[in-house]
Length: 356
Image (cartoon, rainbow, N blue to C red; front, side, top):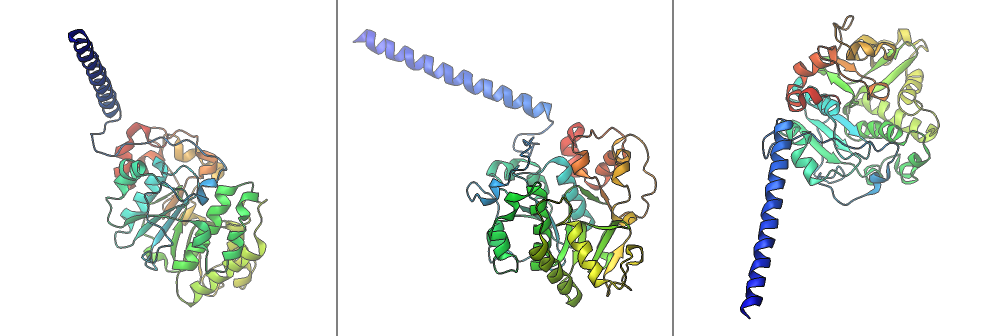
């Protein structure tokens, strides 16, 4: 009996030692991670998300979500709000996207900024990633879009219910194209792409505006549609255009293409160089120098060390993520300098890892 008790006691002691060693190892790993990434216990830290490509299956998943629903009756943004849509299945923001959100929030302290996710966002991402940093801004909010429910009782209800994006070669991007217009149809306000950085308040630009990428195309990466008569006409026309002419096989057809086609009907002339509030029934059409000061053919200028020229009139900068997501942001590059100035919270959080 004594031998049996002794063996049992010895086993329990060994078990406790193993548990203690495991806890010590876990603590050491945690401390090393925290020291390496310059964060403190309980503070948000950066999470590298796996790229999910063209997958949009998460759009139809309801479980594991920490965000409030954009279909809830309590979700009611003001008509001058600023919206971002994240339609990949990553379930979080990378540093460049978070920088875009912070820059918009800082430039518009009296306007609400909403980041709308099509994928579930887990509790740990909500509480410990860069989202936790952004939540400290009183005018930044996050919501989950369940696209089928979000489109309910709108002209796009039947179209969205038929799940047309699954046939697209660019499912993530085409979902974003439709959601930006649907959001402005429902609430009014400003839509911005997550690969932009805001350097000036957009408020002086008016309530209804769009911007040319060049004299052949109006880009949809930044657009404002209000709840007034002109805004409602524009919103209805774009939604009708999407419902009638959605194409899954053409890259720009449903985003820039849709608004450009609508404006060809709205404006008195087909010459984009002459589009303005005077020729487009009061809709302001800004030149590329306001929102797209550096053409995508010169995108390297943002990422290489040096000074940026020809962008003095810019309200935003567009970084052409589809072409630049793998490009390194060099030290003393225009992108790095702007991040330090316009999204300092996110830049400080990521440090040398910003943009990677």
